[in-house]
Length: 173
Picture 1 (cartoon, rainbow, N blue to C red):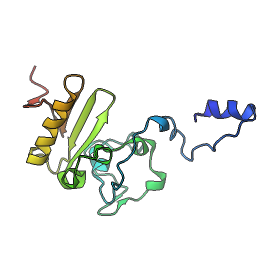
Picture 2 (picture 1 turned 30 degrees about the vertical axis):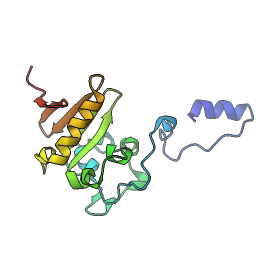
Picture 3 (picture 1 turned 135 degrees about the vertical axis):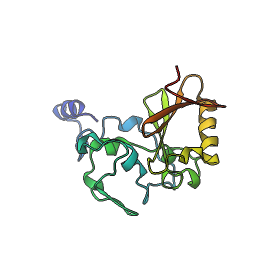
Picture 4 (picture 1 turned 180 degrees about the vertical axis):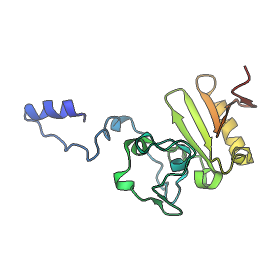
């Protein structure tokens, strides 16, 4: 429930749920997809590396100073809003096995808006997307989502578009 609805309900005498501990947490709560039962981040912190975190002035592909290797986020309960809002594709897709968990394949999959699915490679493993399991998954995504959505593959400094049978550099016309 947003703050305006919370105030209106309170004025009307309707019971009101408490405000979220972190402002902005519930802005899309109704539209947030469910995490697949049995899946969790655990010790995986690949998103902390490949994604930018504006609130921390952390650029994509830079290490996050709040990550404890093999353990996770040291500020998890106080993490910034952009971290709270991000949900990795592996957590959402019941068909992505453990071999496609980002800490194993070194690629973070996520949805960008309604139109794009992105796979972002860890800069320390620039060829990770070339592994057969990752390539197969990228092409399967492209086939299942074409033509209405694009599958984009990102590596530090390079971008490709993925089709069901090719991977094309984005900078070629």
